[in-house]
Length: 410
Image 1 (tube, rainbow, N blue to C red):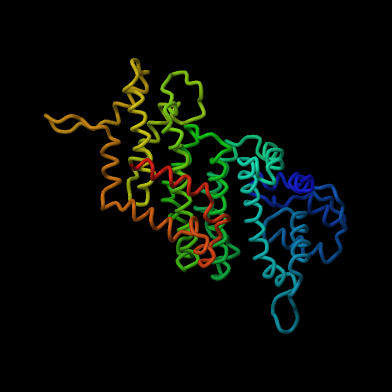
Image 2: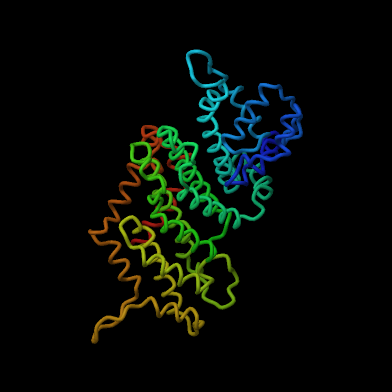
């Protein structure tokens, strides 16, 4: 276990940085590589021969990563996969160009592995019987001293990637552009997996954060709105986007904390709540969440729509039992009622929302059935067959979230 912790400790800055895990080129790192001697993050010193210098600097320039990290990447590639490239009369490419082509898939996979490191740590922290529970509880606070800021950074980087254009270096190479676009989408998927586990038990679902995550989900239409969508039309690209949509559904249900809200004391209506870490502690956040959810009632959003209807029903039940209701909560509660024609009683919005969500036209149960039987998120065999890059298919937490959603529809 100590060895695992040491491995993690030397990579904390990489694991934490979701934007530039391999850094960016710097004069100091380039000078170190060119000097022939580099000090690695774990304190070890390695010698750099002339060939490695040339390769490392070329990789740093091509991938726009730190020169020392490029050298580490080169050594890792040679150790794990070897160098099976050739140059000469049979090729119009230089040895360096061939190396870049050969190492690109390895580099792409390493980026995904870095993102995924946090997933087993989050899971282990929640389970005291997990073999690496002690490792997780020891290292997570050092990796993520501010969980809220990390969740913010994940959402921001996800949005940036969804809107990112193909780099100019790939613009004239359709195959390279397609590989880049799919890698970009895979990293979005991995980030959403990490975000799911971050919100599962590490970061509280407080108002501002819930609003931000819902905005990210709706603004990208659950991931289908991609800058490079035309490069994701084949079977593989379509599968990645479907997995992204499935994860967004789970995340937007998860952050509503339906099981907690369902508890008798799950919601506190007070101007000075004892627990301010749940979004219901902020009437302003409730209003913003309500506006977001009710403005996005399409079929793909029906799970979140129904989940929010359940939250509103619980808030209504809580307020109805109170003798005195804070004005801000009363204002929000009153705004969630419809005003029908004269002679009829007004109905709570959650009643109408539930009626809409459960109508045959919306197809809630068909959507849930498809998720549970055909999505790599819930069926391991499907994940293997489809070649999905979902890290942990059929996780118990995924099923727990969806079970909470199904309970709210009863």
